[in-house]
Amino acid sequence: MALVSPMVRTALFVSDIDRSAAFYKEVMELEDVYAEGGLTHATAAKLLGMPPETNIRYKILRAAGLNKGMVGLFQMKDPEPPNISKRPDGCSVGEACLVFYCADLDVVHDRLITGGHHVVCPPLHLEVEIEAGAIESDGRGQREMTFHDPDGVLVNLIEMDPTSDR
Figure (cartoon, one colour):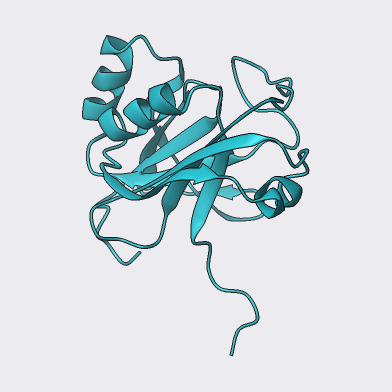
C-alpha cells in the first residue's frame, strides 16, 4: 500500500476568488464546484501559516464528476498574505506550473486572447528528449502552450485527448 496517494488537487492562493473562478471555468472548463464556503476554524489558518483571525474563502473546481485534478482557490483577508515575485514572461525558481491535457489548444488560445489574458508561449510543437542529448525528430512529441492565470500562476496545456490513459 502506498504511503501517499497521487495528487488530489492544487491549492491556489488568489487575490480575487470570483475572478479566478470565472477564469478557470471559462478558459479551462472546470465548471463543476466540488465545494465552496468559508474556513472559520483557527486550524485552517494555522495550516496555512496565517493568524487565527484570517478570513478564508475557498472554492474547489473540477471537471464534471472527477474527484482528481481539482483546482482549489483560496482567498485570504484580514490579513492578506504577501504577493510573491514572479517573472511576467516565464517561470521563477520555487514557482509551480499547473499542467493539463487539452483536446484543442487553438480553441483555448483564442479564449485567452479574446479575454485579454497573458499568453507566455502560444501553441508550438515540442519534440521530446528520449535519452541524454538525443531529440526525437520523427514528428513525435506534442503541441503545448503556456499562459498565466489572473494571479500569474503558470499553466501548461499539452494537446492530447483529456480522456486518454496516457
